[in-house]
Image: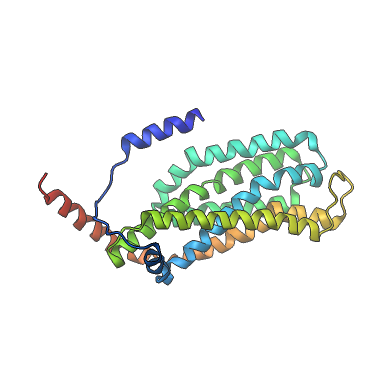
Length: 266
């Protein structure tokens, strides 16, 4: 909480509108028509949902994994501490480095999720063999994957700029709301999906060390395999990221708007 408060003060001090526009009052349906009229934005909606799904599964299934797959409920707090610290490291240290190297959010996503998939696949087959190895690899994987929740905000910025370029309007609020809705959809699929997989695989509540093999496979898949599949789809969508070809035009638009703003009488 203290770190978040300090971060918000820093953001307030450093943030400044890059360019200003006069917005006409339009009905929300008109704004939605503008947004959904661009097929280039649809893959980003899917990325938002899948990132929410993958991130949510990481935390929501860890307790099931340690309690039932490892049959060690006494280690739950230790494992949750490891991945929580990994998430903190991801946001505060790894993401800035990734952005400095890769420049753009979608490229940083590709790198972070590729590493996550490799580690998750190792853990899918070996996670129950050594708890120390599980913690180390989970920490690294979480340090790579957790930044996806912040990186998708850069995709939102790209969408805002794209709409400004194509339609000459600023839809910050509308696009932010759509992003929030897409993220909630991913969370809903995550919550319902966990229950559906557990039910389908024969999970027995409270049966530590006595789960059927099908339930064990389901829990292991929820923890590592399904998030890997979601990450792979995000990687494919980011490789063919539809807005990157508009970056030069967007930069020209920003420079023009900035010049017009500086030329206005104070």
